[in-house]
Image (cartoon, one colour):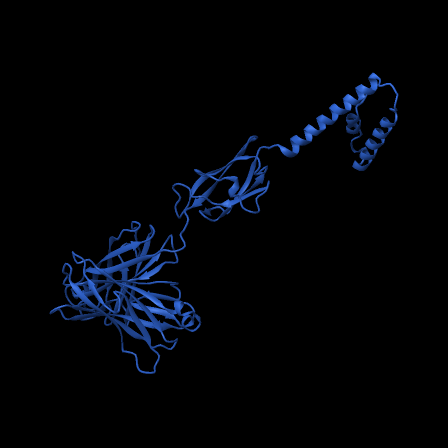
Length: 433
């Protein structure tokens, strides 16, 4: 019986350690080499043994190359996180995921090139930014995940949520279109119809809730008719109008305001507020009767440190003490409706504080930027469309007093000067509640 070297080593199995096997191979080869001397005959047995050893080595090398270098069927164990948001990192964990051999990485209808794999990717996991998927929503949709190579294909599934942009720019104005004709009386239900004019940089649903600020508050209630919450869906970049009905129940007595609060859903950091509408027992409430109306107010920047809320422009004392001048500056946009409207009518604009700043005392500096302070005039567009004013406001310090920002409009000619006021004050602390 004749055995090849490889057959002998396989038969030895676990009887020899790897070191013992290597020593045996070296010894046998050395012995075989010594048996052939210059001038010796090369017999058929010797030559055949050499050929057998060569074939044996070729088989072993081929097997080793197949196990270490070729693709094997990929396996997916898990996907994390799940659900995953477009733009965030996604990790596929599994086996046989060596990127050198992958022919397909696919999430939903989006393919990921192996060149986009991130640091941390290896044969056990693939890490990459979650691609955009057709039909993805903020709530998420289920999609198929595929990883394939020449040896086979692995499939799994996950939920992909639509990506959320870092910032949302939106202005929301509210005007009362229908109000009780008579003065408000105690312990009575009333309805107010309001139009919301919304312009948003992104498609978004805004939740709308009413806020009541009346003293004394006993007996007063306020609600939006559809269960205390209403949603609006604007078209990106196009102003749209939505209607909201608010129900008010009066108490025995009281005077104050109500306003509407706006909160984003896909952009939960977005918060806004309408102007405050005055209400009181014994008084009529219909601001649309006035010749000048502030439809919306928007404050730029971090809304946790400076914002417009409940009819007031607010800034935190911490920002005034520690921020740069640019951070402390309030950049304000006011949307203004003027009645009577007239095509191409020209108006003079003014901004001031009430009371005016006192000499040597903490104060607010208000500067009109559009139209420019040097020529503070606006021309109302044909059809009586609303006009936009922009301004910058800076407090001299955290002890600046509470004041009113007075927006004034005077018509050229016989039209008298008209004004509207917004609150302006400093909030103690680092965050606006």
